Amino acid sequence: MFELTPSDQVSCADLRELAQSEAGGKLKSITDDLIDLSTMFSEANGQPDLLVKLETIEDDRCRKFHLDNVKARLVVTYHGPGTQWVTPGDEERALHEQTAFTGPISEVAVGNVAMFFGKKSDRATLILHRSAPIESRKLRRLVAVIDFASA
Image (cartoon, rainbow, N blue to C red; front, side, top):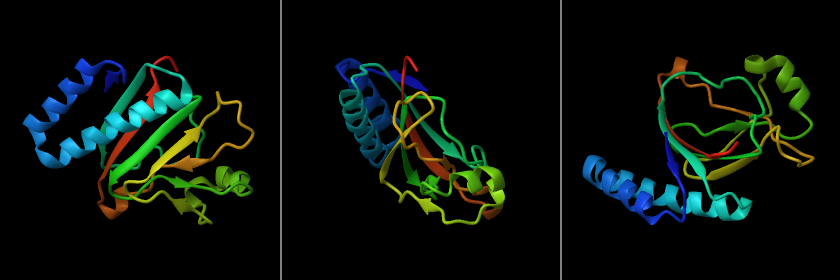
C-alpha cells in the first residue's frame, strides 16, 4: 500500500516509472488509470490525501456481505470476477443468509469503477457488497481500492 496525493507530481511520476521498469505496458496502463481515478476521487470528495492499494487476491476474503467502515471507497477489478452487490430491498436477507444468499446479486464488470459509500457516510442509501467468491473455482482477482488517507 502506498500513499498518493494527486497534486504530488513526484509521487505520480515515481509510480509510473516503477510500473514501467518492473511490469511493462499492461501495468503502466493500470498505473495511469489509478492516477486518473485517484485524482477524480480526490476532487469529487474534497480529500487531497488517499491510500491506494493494488492487490492480487486468490482467496475468499471479504466474502460476506458488508458495509465498509469508511465514508467512501472506490473499487475497480482489473482481472477476475468483480465486486458483487445487492440491490436495495434485499439487504436484510443477504446479511442474514450471507454466503448462502443466492440472489439477486449484481456484479461490477471488469474495468468498471464502483464507489461504495460506507458506514461513515451521511447518504441515506448504502450498497451492501462483497468480494466475489473465487477460492473454490481457483480464480484470481487483481483489485484496486482507493480510500481517504484520513479515514
